[in-house]
Figure 1 (cartoon, helix red, strand yellow):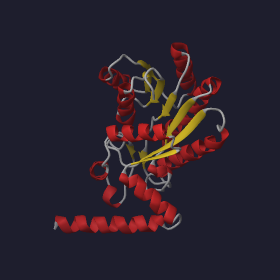
Figure 2 (cartoon, one colour):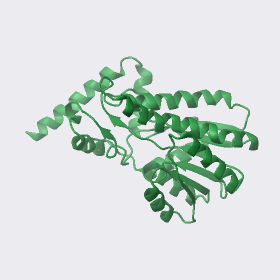
Figure 3 (cartoon, rainbow, N blue to C red):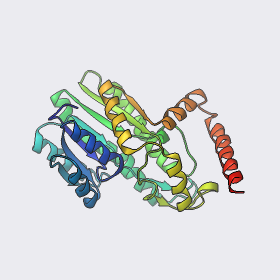
Figure 4 (cartoon, helix red, strand yellow):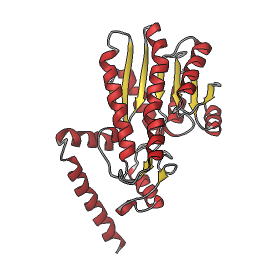
Length: 276
């Protein structure tokens, strides 16, 4: 991003979205920030050096995302980067998860990306440039127990974005799939926790386990994203855990779940030994 270029970030009220807003502000970008939380948006707006354009948006609502695109065009006449970042999750088994929870996660994580892509793409193609950066997850590469709905949404984002790699060839517009590993955000604290298994038997233990595993800060995540965009990468892996899991999946596409289960049992055995 160059000074004066226009960047739109959804889910900008906290976590990765807020960190991206700060990083882009540091590069002199003109910001359009969106989030479902007005309070979170206000907090982010106070942290950047210049007043951003802000809009309260539920990305699962097509009309609201289309209005965001129209507002951006009216305000700046162009858009150089759109980061479809807003995301939620639910902790439950595929067997027991409710259709309501399934629709909630897919509405934000997948349809939010679809709406954000389709709403801004015509403007980018008309100007002959731009980047659509869709935030998937390492869980868009590997499956994880009790995150089946989240996995489904993030695998969908990955596939949707990879199709754009070829469809946008020659247009001047790029699509990028972003795959964070464990990032120190509040997504686990704010998730809908329905049931757990083993070491994730309740919400509190799940949060504590996530906090121990998540080694990458939102600021580090944002820096990696912008570095990847600068280098023209199509897929951006964030964190050593994401890189390791991606390699494991590539090495054994059908066997990696067994390897992960073996590793998890060893870790749990060590923890149990320490507690004695």
